[in-house]
Image (cartoon, rainbow, N blue to C red; front, side):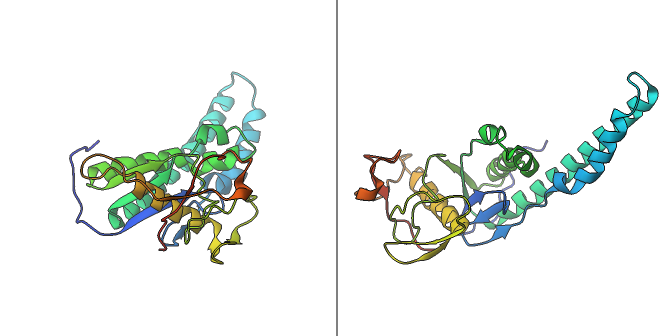
Length: 234
């Protein structure tokens, strides 16, 4: 693997990236990257090959050949996903001087009913490519904590509006009235949090301004903490 630095021309653009299942990735500028769902698309053929494998006698040559066909199909799916990850990660790194992502608990999500979709997305591999390419091409790559309330905070005024069920894809801030796309708002909050936590020239993180938590937040896991403000409108 080529590890020599290949610095790209500098750009002033930075991006916060939210990963999901309805859209593979959403950028803070509103760009949505649709998930190709390589495993889902190959599922019918895989089921047929698995069924054919199960019918072969154990220890037979026919079973060995059927097992190879199943393995090859899985390898094709993985190869297509890996190639797509390479192209998308290269494009994002090329277009942005800094990228910020959320530190997802992928291993935990892989044990839920969403396991197949999580494995199909391949988030960990994609983030690994982003991080590697950022270092190689002179870009900045940052992760924010997984407990940041990115989907609860209004990216326009910084007020924490509270948790929302997953089926809620758009909401209106009760404080400033801004109408948000849930995923785009989260990506903008990731960008703001990443910028705030990025070390400055002296190596210290830049602190965000804070406002007192609202009374209706009492009893939430964030009790006693301050809501984050100063999130810029992009």
